[in-house]
Image (tube, rainbow, N blue to C red; front, top):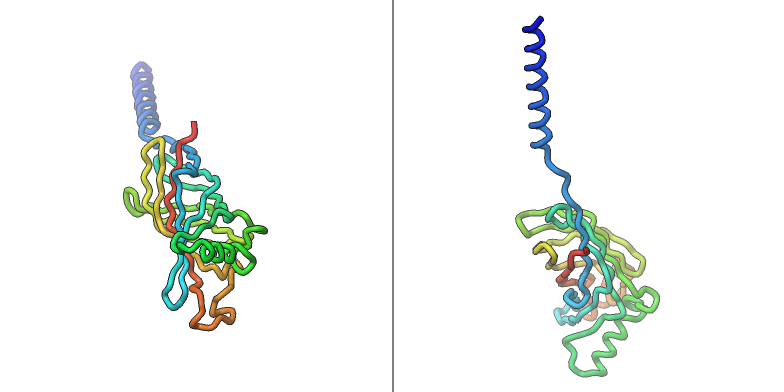
Length: 207
């Protein structure tokens, strides 16, 4: 009987040790952290081109947004873009500059009076290395939403997160059809359907 008790106690000790080892080795749940977009440090540079090769470029401001990290890695986010902040950088003549910006803001292009905001929603982040990653999500312009994917370089410095990359979207998918050969524009006056956005997001960790 005494031997049976000793064996039971030994087995119980082994079971408890194994359970404790599993508990210690089990991965802890990753911590979620929220970062608020720093509007003053964030920049977006747009570029549009004619099919013949001439280009125009300028800036557009991010009005608000948040990024989420799981552990140390970016995992989601929402970025709101102020469409009325659109400017042109490469035309020096004030009148010509104003004419282009006004045209881009009117109904032929982005109709910013009716659609003052665009939204980029990040729903999936796949890391390819320490900092290189592919972002997938949805881009909404003029109340039209389409999936988007682009590569970025991400740096998480603890209290500050930066994501730098180039996003290219087909404007015709967002009802911006002016000057597209798909909708009747002459080839020598056609404007490329693709618009590129060079994005430099900077966000600070929220307390």
